[in-house]
Image (cartoon, rainbow, N blue to C red; front, top):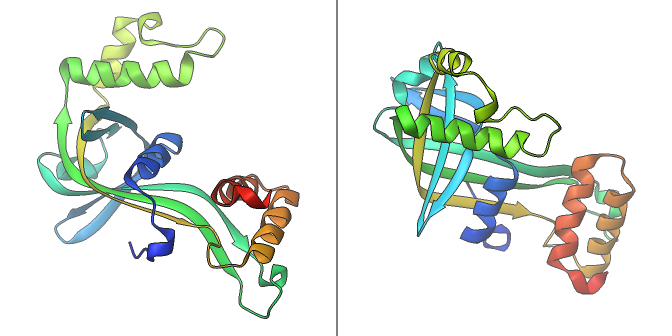
Length: 206
């Protein structure tokens, strides 16, 4: 991913994006053809290492590219929105602001207790705060065993991370403040989230 120096995220910020926006695109290559699947992943840190765990349907042909693959890419998309150049003081062209992370790594298939631990962690994250949430210990063994036969689970050890936050950093303070105001007036959720990020970059303006 091409990232001008002005827009680069540091490692900690990029990892946080991966945790906040875990619905990623898993990209691998099969005999020269890129293939991709949209899936939720679980990000884990162990010392200096970062791992992403996820699963795809057993019927998904991408499963054949998962074992021992050292060229796996996960794409994480954060908030993004259109920026109108009518908000600038001087004549210019419009653009698109966004936050995104590309994580590269090596994948392997997981099963047994590793698989159960991964699925249990997903349920804990998304169900624990819901009334009558469906957590691992509330579901029958028969159901769980049957469902696990229909998936292929994996762990990716992340070896490189590229994070970009293009947030109008090249604009002067007056334009910057105007952009934030216009985005906050928007009824669009992504626009408001971009505005939140921009406020964090130049808090002295607000």
